[in-house]
Length: 108
Length: 119
Image 1 (cartoon, rainbow over the protein chains, first blue to last red):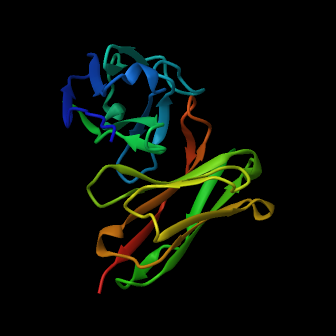
Image 2 (image 1 turned 90 degrees about the vertical axis):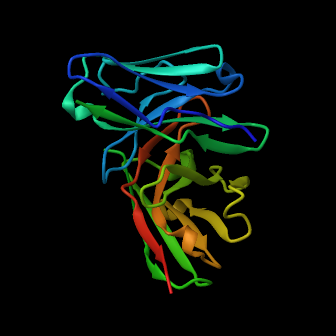
Protein backbone atom coordinates (compact mmCIF):
# COMPACT_ATOMS: atom_id res chain seq x y z
CA UNK A 1 0.00 0.00 0.00
CA UNK A 2 1.02 3.60 -0.58
CA UNK A 3 3.00 5.29 2.18
CA UNK A 4 3.71 8.95 2.93
CA UNK A 5 6.71 10.00 4.97
CA UNK A 6 7.24 13.20 6.95
CA UNK A 7 9.87 14.31 9.47
CA UNK A 8 8.47 13.95 12.96
CA UNK A 9 9.56 17.43 13.98
CA UNK A 10 10.95 20.67 12.60
CA UNK A 11 12.19 23.63 14.62
CA UNK A 12 12.61 27.19 13.40
CA UNK A 13 13.27 30.60 14.87
CA UNK A 14 10.67 33.34 14.52
CA UNK A 15 11.02 35.26 11.27
CA UNK A 16 12.88 32.43 9.56
CA UNK A 17 11.65 29.96 6.98
CA UNK A 18 10.33 26.50 7.87
CA UNK A 19 10.39 23.64 5.38
CA UNK A 20 8.32 20.50 5.89
CA UNK A 21 8.60 17.63 3.44
CA UNK A 22 6.26 14.82 2.45
CA UNK A 23 7.69 11.90 0.52
CA UNK A 24 6.01 9.20 -1.51
CA UNK A 25 6.47 7.23 -4.70
CA UNK A 26 5.30 9.26 -7.73
CA UNK A 27 3.84 11.80 -5.36
CA UNK A 28 3.57 14.29 -8.21
CA UNK A 29 0.64 12.30 -9.60
CA UNK A 30 -1.41 12.26 -6.37
CA UNK A 31 -2.95 15.73 -5.84
CA UNK A 32 -1.38 16.30 -2.45
CA UNK A 33 -2.85 18.59 0.21
CA UNK A 34 -1.54 20.08 3.46
CA UNK A 35 -3.38 20.60 6.76
CA UNK A 36 -2.48 22.53 9.88
CA UNK A 37 -3.71 21.33 13.26
CA UNK A 38 -3.22 23.27 16.47
CA UNK A 39 -3.64 21.52 19.85
CA UNK A 40 -7.25 20.76 20.64
CA UNK A 41 -8.44 22.14 17.31
CA UNK A 42 -9.75 20.68 14.08
CA UNK A 43 -7.37 20.47 11.11
CA UNK A 44 -7.45 23.32 8.59
CA UNK A 45 -6.71 22.98 4.89
CA UNK A 46 -3.81 25.31 4.09
CA UNK A 47 -2.59 24.09 0.69
CA UNK A 48 -4.41 22.01 -1.93
CA UNK A 49 -3.08 20.36 -5.07
CA UNK A 50 0.53 20.93 -3.99
CA UNK A 51 0.60 24.72 -4.27
CA UNK A 52 -2.79 26.44 -4.08
CA UNK A 53 -3.90 28.39 -1.01
CA UNK A 54 -7.57 28.42 0.07
CA UNK A 55 -9.12 31.79 0.74
CA UNK A 56 -7.90 33.25 4.02
CA UNK A 57 -4.59 31.39 4.17
CA UNK A 58 -1.65 33.81 4.37
CA UNK A 59 0.76 34.05 1.44
CA UNK A 60 3.52 33.01 3.85
CA UNK A 61 2.34 29.44 3.27
CA UNK A 62 3.41 27.91 -0.03
CA UNK A 63 3.92 24.49 -1.50
CA UNK A 64 5.57 22.76 -4.38
CA UNK A 65 6.50 19.28 -5.58
CA UNK A 66 9.61 17.89 -7.16
CA UNK A 67 10.34 14.26 -7.85
CA UNK A 68 9.03 12.11 -5.04
CA UNK A 69 8.85 14.94 -2.50
CA UNK A 70 6.25 17.60 -1.81
CA UNK A 71 7.31 20.55 0.31
CA UNK A 72 5.39 22.96 2.52
CA UNK A 73 7.26 26.22 3.09
CA UNK A 74 6.30 28.70 5.78
CA UNK A 75 8.04 32.05 5.38
CA UNK A 76 8.55 34.60 8.14
CA UNK A 77 7.45 32.08 10.74
CA UNK A 78 5.36 33.36 13.63
CA UNK A 79 4.70 31.88 17.05
CA UNK A 80 1.12 31.21 15.94
CA UNK A 81 2.37 28.83 13.25
CA UNK A 82 3.34 26.30 15.90
CA UNK A 83 1.20 23.27 15.07
CA UNK A 84 1.19 19.81 13.56
CA UNK A 85 1.23 19.67 9.77
CA UNK A 86 -0.11 16.74 7.76
CA UNK A 87 0.12 15.91 4.07
CA UNK A 88 -2.70 13.90 2.46
CA UNK A 89 -3.37 12.15 -0.85
CA UNK A 90 -5.87 9.89 -2.56
CA UNK A 91 -4.48 6.45 -3.36
CA UNK A 92 -6.44 5.15 -6.33
CA UNK A 93 -4.98 1.65 -6.10
CA UNK A 94 -6.45 1.03 -2.64
CA UNK A 95 -9.33 3.53 -3.00
CA UNK A 96 -8.22 4.99 0.31
CA UNK A 97 -7.36 8.47 1.45
CA UNK A 98 -4.01 8.61 3.24
CA UNK A 99 -2.43 11.04 5.66
CA UNK A 100 1.24 11.39 6.35
CA UNK A 101 2.34 10.77 9.96
CA UNK A 102 2.51 14.49 10.66
CA UNK A 103 5.27 16.97 11.46
CA UNK A 104 5.32 18.96 14.67
CA UNK A 105 6.54 22.49 13.99
CA UNK A 106 8.18 24.18 16.96
CA UNK A 107 8.87 27.90 16.91
CA UNK A 108 11.92 28.50 19.07
CA UNK B 1 -20.41 30.44 7.48
CA UNK B 2 -20.01 26.84 6.44
CA UNK B 3 -19.74 24.60 9.50
CA UNK B 4 -19.89 21.00 10.60
CA UNK B 5 -20.72 19.78 14.09
CA UNK B 6 -20.34 16.25 15.36
CA UNK B 7 -22.26 14.64 18.18
CA UNK B 8 -22.88 11.23 19.66
CA UNK B 9 -19.51 10.46 21.19
CA UNK B 10 -19.09 9.04 24.65
CA UNK B 11 -18.04 5.98 26.60
CA UNK B 12 -18.71 2.52 25.20
CA UNK B 13 -17.72 -0.98 26.24
CA UNK B 14 -15.65 -3.21 24.01
CA UNK B 15 -18.04 -4.97 21.67
CA UNK B 16 -20.57 -2.18 22.05
CA UNK B 17 -22.00 0.30 19.56
CA UNK B 18 -22.26 4.04 19.07
CA UNK B 19 -23.74 6.20 16.36
CA UNK B 20 -22.07 9.49 15.52
CA UNK B 21 -23.85 12.32 13.77
CA UNK B 22 -22.47 15.25 11.79
CA UNK B 23 -24.71 18.21 11.13
CA UNK B 24 -23.94 20.71 8.37
CA UNK B 25 -24.85 24.38 8.39
CA UNK B 26 -24.22 27.11 5.86
CA UNK B 27 -24.18 24.73 2.92
CA UNK B 28 -26.17 21.85 1.48
CA UNK B 29 -24.67 18.51 2.38
CA UNK B 30 -26.34 16.92 -0.65
CA UNK B 31 -23.90 18.61 -3.01
CA UNK B 32 -20.78 17.11 -1.50
CA UNK B 33 -18.93 13.92 -0.81
CA UNK B 34 -18.19 13.52 2.88
CA UNK B 35 -15.67 11.70 5.05
CA UNK B 36 -14.91 10.68 8.62
CA UNK B 37 -11.40 10.98 10.06
CA UNK B 38 -10.27 9.99 13.53
CA UNK B 39 -7.37 10.85 15.76
CA UNK B 40 -6.34 8.60 18.62
CA UNK B 41 -4.88 10.35 21.69
CA UNK B 42 -1.44 11.71 20.86
CA UNK B 43 -1.52 10.21 17.39
CA UNK B 44 -1.93 11.42 13.82
CA UNK B 45 -4.94 11.67 11.55
CA UNK B 46 -6.49 8.48 10.17
CA UNK B 47 -9.05 8.56 7.36
CA UNK B 48 -11.74 5.96 8.03
CA UNK B 49 -14.64 6.36 5.62
CA UNK B 50 -15.96 8.17 2.53
CA UNK B 51 -19.40 8.50 0.96
CA UNK B 52 -20.60 10.01 -2.30
CA UNK B 53 -23.43 12.57 -2.53
CA UNK B 54 -26.14 9.95 -2.99
CA UNK B 55 -24.54 7.27 -0.84
CA UNK B 56 -24.12 5.02 -3.86
CA UNK B 57 -20.39 4.59 -3.27
CA UNK B 58 -18.69 4.02 0.08
CA UNK B 59 -15.05 3.36 0.87
CA UNK B 60 -13.70 2.43 4.29
CA UNK B 61 -10.32 1.87 5.86
CA UNK B 62 -9.35 -1.70 6.54
CA UNK B 63 -9.22 -0.96 10.27
CA UNK B 64 -12.99 -0.37 10.42
CA UNK B 65 -14.32 -2.33 7.45
CA UNK B 66 -17.18 -4.60 8.45
CA UNK B 67 -17.65 -2.79 11.78
CA UNK B 68 -18.30 0.88 10.91
CA UNK B 69 -20.88 2.11 8.41
CA UNK B 70 -21.04 5.61 6.97
CA UNK B 71 -24.42 6.94 5.84
CA UNK B 72 -26.18 10.20 5.19
CA UNK B 73 -29.60 11.84 5.21
CA UNK B 74 -29.44 14.76 2.81
CA UNK B 75 -32.94 15.88 3.77
CA UNK B 76 -31.65 16.39 7.32
CA UNK B 77 -28.32 17.80 6.12
CA UNK B 78 -26.63 15.14 8.22
CA UNK B 79 -23.91 12.51 8.01
CA UNK B 80 -23.64 9.47 10.26
CA UNK B 81 -21.15 6.86 11.40
CA UNK B 82 -22.56 3.68 12.89
CA UNK B 83 -19.84 2.01 14.93
CA UNK B 84 -20.37 -1.62 15.96
CA UNK B 85 -18.17 -4.16 17.70
CA UNK B 86 -16.07 -1.37 19.15
CA UNK B 87 -12.51 -2.07 20.22
CA UNK B 88 -10.28 -0.30 22.71
CA UNK B 89 -8.16 0.89 19.79
CA UNK B 90 -11.17 2.78 18.37
CA UNK B 91 -10.74 5.34 21.16
CA UNK B 92 -10.25 8.64 19.36
CA UNK B 93 -11.68 12.01 18.44
CA UNK B 94 -13.85 11.55 15.36
CA UNK B 95 -14.09 14.39 12.84
CA UNK B 96 -16.38 14.72 9.87
CA UNK B 97 -15.22 16.82 6.93
CA UNK B 98 -16.46 17.93 3.56
CA UNK B 99 -14.63 16.28 0.71
CA UNK B 100 -14.23 18.90 -1.98
CA UNK B 101 -12.79 16.32 -4.32
CA UNK B 102 -9.52 14.55 -4.95
CA UNK B 103 -7.94 17.73 -6.29
CA UNK B 104 -9.25 20.13 -3.64
CA UNK B 105 -8.94 18.48 -0.22
CA UNK B 106 -11.09 18.39 2.90
CA UNK B 107 -12.69 21.62 4.07
CA UNK B 108 -14.28 22.47 6.43
CA UNK B 109 -13.82 20.07 9.34
CA UNK B 110 -15.93 19.66 12.42
CA UNK B 111 -14.39 20.09 15.86
CA UNK B 112 -14.81 16.40 16.57
CA UNK B 113 -16.50 14.17 19.09
CA UNK B 114 -14.60 11.97 21.54
CA UNK B 115 -15.23 8.24 21.64
CA UNK B 116 -13.75 6.24 24.51
CA UNK B 117 -13.92 2.47 24.41
CA UNK B 118 -13.10 0.96 27.76
CA UNK B 119 -14.27 -1.79 30.06
